[in-house]
Image (tube, rainbow, N blue to C red; front, top):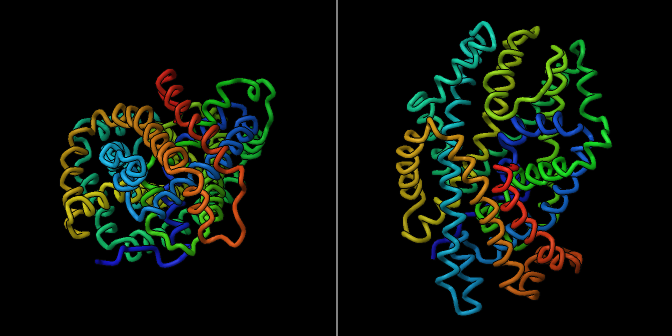
Length: 440
């Protein structure tokens, strides 16, 4: 039997998981929500939910993957197989796999935008419009149907090219380069912004405590959604990365590091974007692609050294996005390998062809595409993975897998918290997302 690919070392795995977690949500949504929901009043519930989800769902998905040495399909099949329902489990396992593929396809469209803006930052075209209206018109043209084919195809091939090298030589090596560069570049941006006139008002805004916001249910709901989606619990990417781990790895410790660096990335983004907006007296009430591709470029253009700032910003964001993209594609690629018995490059090629066709066709509706996935499929996949591991596999199995690689047993409160708090949270995220039109 061919040896399963794996990460070379602990930090290679951790950086890959950090890469999967650090993405557009940290950069184009987190700062906006900090601004809208009371600064520190939002950070408090956000950190609580990051700790809760990091030490339940993230640990669970990593451990489930390592225990079964497989992706969601075979992992779910194993869990249900203990009850004589293996085929049902396998069918359910295709939900997070197809969800990961669909999310990756949508993310490919966004990566095409980012690649165009990153290259344009070097050539000068990114900052060439004269005002916010022109920045908006250019983005609308790019984000329309078939509006960015060339850069989107290049972004797809970059991601698939990394994945063709496998786990250790592709995913791990890429993240060892991209993640340190991301944090260094954002730290540089943060230092630069700190010396701009008016930036202090942004810091006051971030760390203020607004009692009204703290008791507002919306603050807690959207903090939960941000933490849930930022940590990439969806029954696919984190689970498949866990399947490449050796038994010597201490998973609870690794999950803690992933949660810490993901939160650090989000706070770094807030420390750059909110004070930058404050230097012009603008209020940050615009999130999503509009912030990234319209308002921030317009802001950079008005700042001293804006050309250099735009280069640093879009290089850092592109690396963050690319690391998330390869994580999303890994689960479907691994599933094609396992189920069709194809080699790594052949499986990557199959997924690339599907993604190329679909991603080009959805350019004009990518926002709605991603909304459907984040509202329905991601929390459903996370909930299914949680039920399979924490409820179906049983107490002894879970405790054995969690403690594998540890010198001291993990808390005996872990399983009850996962069963009776984390799994219901997944259902709650699904319900709230449907009711409110998305909370991630």
